[in-house]
Length: 450
Figure 1 (cartoon, one colour):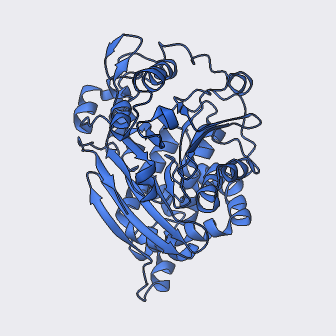
Figure 2 (figure 1 turned 180 degrees about the vertical axis):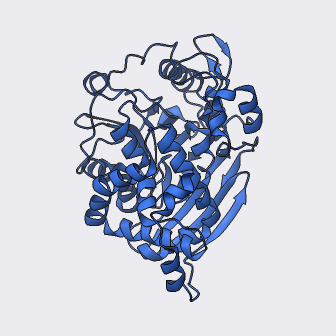
Figure 3 (figure 1 turned 60 degrees about the horizontal axis):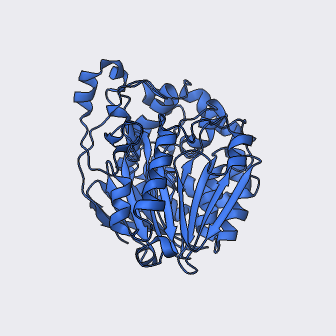
């Protein structure tokens, strides 16, 4: 039924006529391993976008199922209205302020169509805007992700180590398996984890040729309505491509800030060995920098004033909640147990951690760093056994970042397996997820290299 809704936004016959001649594809598939697919694209905006759409044609087919499911089930809207809002709020800003990225998205649409997958420009703009519009439609968007960045006397060799795992529903999480190396005509090269069709990471894990690396965790419980200046995916994409320093990242992210994706951003500069925690809401911001220490995120603003002024978050120190428990556990592991020893191996271990500080035992669930809502009996932010949780793990250090690579584990940082058929059978309340919910294999950690 979702495909029928989408067909209103396609022009298949025109596309076939335009692309009767063979096109040059500015990119290639680098590897497909352990659930990850890594590609490289290069050149002018439209050309690299075309390569993106062509190379990820089969992956983009999944987007045609995932977005309508999210819009219907999470935002309680239909696709026609959702795309209409995107065209009013997002598209004009994108076209006027970021013609480069508008052209890139147009290229993605045309590249996919050339390969036989009907996905329109409007649809892809709405897809890129999902996180921004989620805040528009649903003010209290759920918390996601665990992450840290460490440097100096906190790490084994004094260099930077950064790690992150993505927490999301298993429908969307299944397509967070794309890594793209982008070599733009203008600006700097960067490698990012992303979903098919996105021009920014959105899971927000990236390594740049400038020596800047970055990740984030969302800030939950925001108390404001986004004003919609420049969408966050445009700002962070510009920062990755054109930012040369940590100061550049702050400046770009603050410019015409929409307040549409409140985050605790963690950036590192492998050249200076400095790391930054940059928390940004709508009006509030907080910046901390160091060359010795650790910053981490667990979906609660780390700055007390920020948390009091722009959120209604009362869970920061409440270990019975996901936010409070992960905050406590990350602090224990990073600032006590592993301080001075943090390396790639420790980063993997922390991202896969199942310790529940509230229950005082190892038990994978909503309170563990490697989150498993699908195993959670309690009714908390979501219903019991909700198909949501950790869908990956990534770790990088300065040496790997210099080579534009990182360690990744797709499916879950702990390697758990998940059977969609079995889960729906045991929990029939998720019957409506049938057809879009897929299995996750227990994948291994692999090097994502370019």
